[in-house]
Length: 69
Image (cartoon, rainbow, N blue to C red; front, side, top):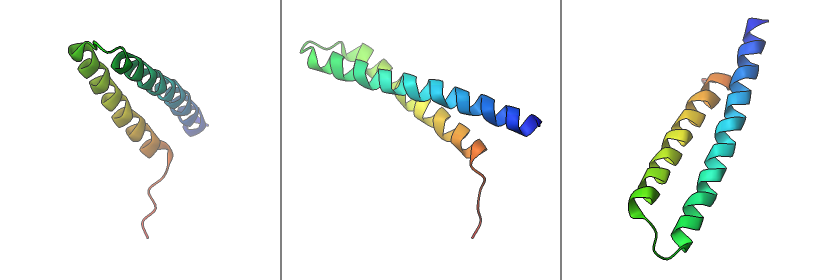
């Protein structure tokens, strides 16, 4: 029972992180199209996006069992 609850929590967190990742994509694109993009802000957004991708990968690894062939 506990494993199902943990998996549900991880799945919910994954949904939030994926949404934030997509939002950052849009924000980065909009900032880049602005012409006079704030390079520091752009770098911060890209770093945040990379951290989110790493966190998403870690959570996905917790849900998907390793299959050793």
